[in-house]
Length: 635
Image 1 (cartoon, one colour):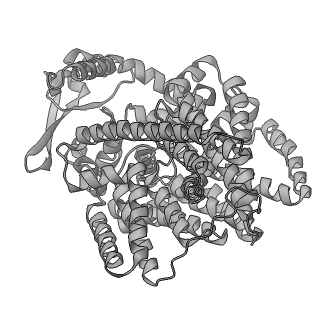
Image 2: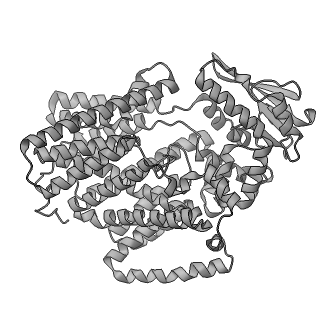
Image 3: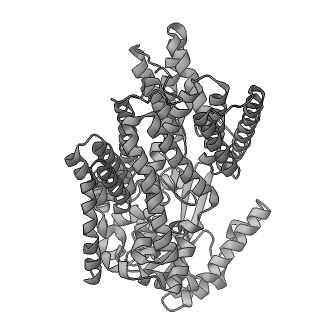
């Protein structure tokens, strides 16, 4: 293994090791506790709902094939994940199956990163800090903080990410056959995740051997396939029309990188900067880190030109900006490792750079408004660290003091905001609430992990005490990992059951249950008439877009009432009754429209059309009743 250059400002830092046998147990329990506490299982949500629907399509094809989301085709054609899930959930069950798969895929990512750091020569203590950071820091990437790696719900990305990571690390070790097979698996599970990994792997090969540039000769093949009309290449020669473009801009805005908030672009630059610095500190992983940073910039630029400027259908659908998941994942553990190594350099300039980097990391982690200024100051401090200009000691002390003040202020502000959000979601704080707050605040959890490490290194009673503490944290985390809301838990555990409403709804009927498409698919085993969830298919189908817009106009009055009620509730919490919407005229308008819904489910009875009611018992003191309305009795 090649060691850092002697001229590097961090080269003289001595590795910290701990050879005690208990360190392995302590390290595993610490990482497990942090992962369990910071990343509790909250069940079916986001894209996980769409993947559940794609799985259910294999169970109930004669019904769901005509659902709005599937009627004109879906991207499920290019993935094996729903077929796998249909078999796996059929044997294990949806609820248990999702938890098992989430745990397995995320543990795979943690182990892969751990092994990568180990092979790169990162010492055990620093590896542990890096793994802690990977557990507690935000996994969000791209624009608007919509997507993240190692999500807490199952999608094709859940499987593609560990395969893609394994492939990149295999290329780094020159194990090309293994890398090729892993890349193939990643592409089969989720092509949009696997494709950026293919480009990064190819870039690494080009750096080592320029003959790999010959692969560019395959580019004309894509155009030939496009000219021949072979999907998905055919759309390479197409552009979005105005109506289609406007629709996906409203429902899939994250695909347009030029529209991303500035803080998201700063986050990308921050991640790439971390990779570039880490490549100098750890030359053995330099090729991968530099190529990942360069490819991130190149694919983001390609997406900006091809999607935002040219409106090209295929380039937009490929979402090349997703390459950021790779650079962000690699940057998280390396950031903390770099900060720790730099701090141990010992001088005021190095410590100032660490404090500036920590403040930037805290702000970037939540996309706080002060992020651009803090990242700029961190970059400037790193430049000073490398160039070592003549700076008066007094000025350095002032700079460090100001940076400490900025760090404390930003941590306090984010802590207050996070606590308010948790309180709004969970009510009165309890033990799990407090631990979740600490675990999801890297400015608290990572220093706490370092404190535990130092206690353990002392040996004797402190080591035994902190070992018992992290073991207890792991046990507590296991017991409280399942944080699913009762409604989500009910859906996941009753997929195979026959719902009382289903007996009254013909198999080919369209059901409008506002923003409850997963319940329509999983509980009723029926087609969902309209929901925002189904807009996820607009990007890939002009026909889906046209039909979605048509149905949106039909239920427009219901949507308007929902927006008004939400606004009133936000202005005066508790003042708006649950039956604020929809009103009888709004439902009547939807039912009477040509091609409207066949049944409507709402949480209060309307004047006409009620054919059944069903009460969901969330808990002993919490109940909600839903009313099934037949549009034939309303028309």
